[in-house]
Structure formats: C-alpha cells, structure tokens
Length: 77
Image 1: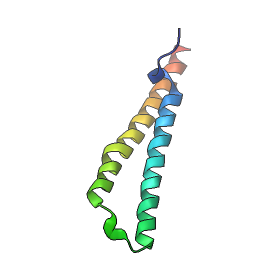
Image 2: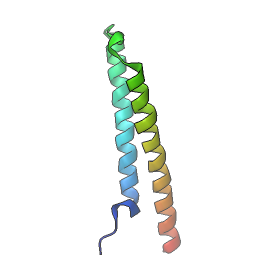
Image 3: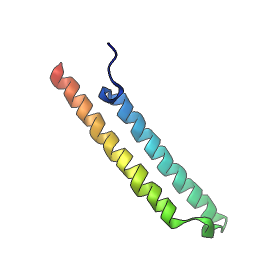
Image 4: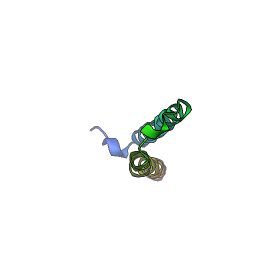
C-alpha cells in the first residue's frame, strides 16, 4: 500500500523549498522596485502578511515535519 504523503520527509523538504522560494522572490521584487525608485508601489502590509502568515509558518512546519518523519523512520527501523 502506498505511504501517505504527510508521512514522507521529502514532502516537508519540498514545503521548505517552496516557502523559501516565495520569500526570496518577494525580497527580490521589493529590492528591484526600490532600486528603480518605485518603492511607493510596495504595500508593506501585504508584504509582511505574506512573510509572517505564509513563509515563516511554512518553513517552521516543514522543518518540524522533516525532523519528525526522519526520527519516526529511525525508531521504526
């Protein structure tokens, strides 16, 4: 029987990668707009919302899930 996706370490590693990618893309866009002197187009509330409600929780859950899955695999043999 196939193993559930949330029981695989690779699922959590992918989650970490996606969240870090979103974080880096957001920083890149803000930096480019700032260098072009178009910083007034950056809405700080939206940028902080993406950062604190999507990226950081996704990274934390990804790290915790990857550790939990790898420890569980080692304990179960």
